[in-house]
Length: 185
Image (tube, rainbow, N blue to C red; front, top):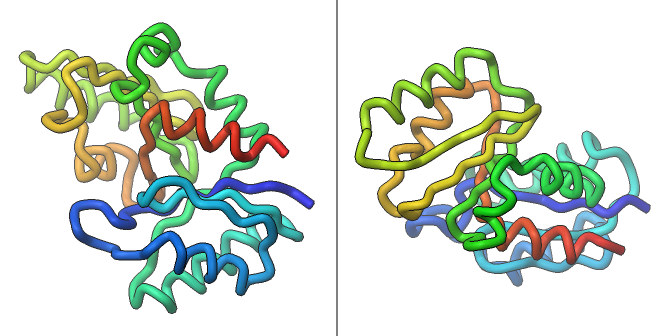
């Protein structure tokens, strides 16, 4: 039975999308998912599930929409996909030095070629920030040496860059490493 990592978008962030993790674990168990664990309050879950990723994704998205009263972005990854994302990180030294300053944005599909131009435009307009980015497949890596609080690579900017048809959600490197560890079953 495959193990999946679910990354929910806009859950318990900035006072919106309130979903206690105990409720999320109960919802997942109610879908027949096994060995359910959650990590921190931002919508991260690891579980075993029968069926394909698309089947699990659809069931989870439907149940979350019913529970929350609105669609909730859901991105699924396997342990092997997280292993690849970790190996592909273009900022490994920075992540090792401070995992809170390196983020990975999980995308539901590879970003269009125009996405890099949009983020370059944002970076050029904010020369006092040292933020860097790198697209690789269905991932966007961010190095935010001045911290995430004042970055101009906001969710709105990233959404505009990748397009409305691509779901995206970000996690800092510490969280990614913990989810990778949890999914190693």
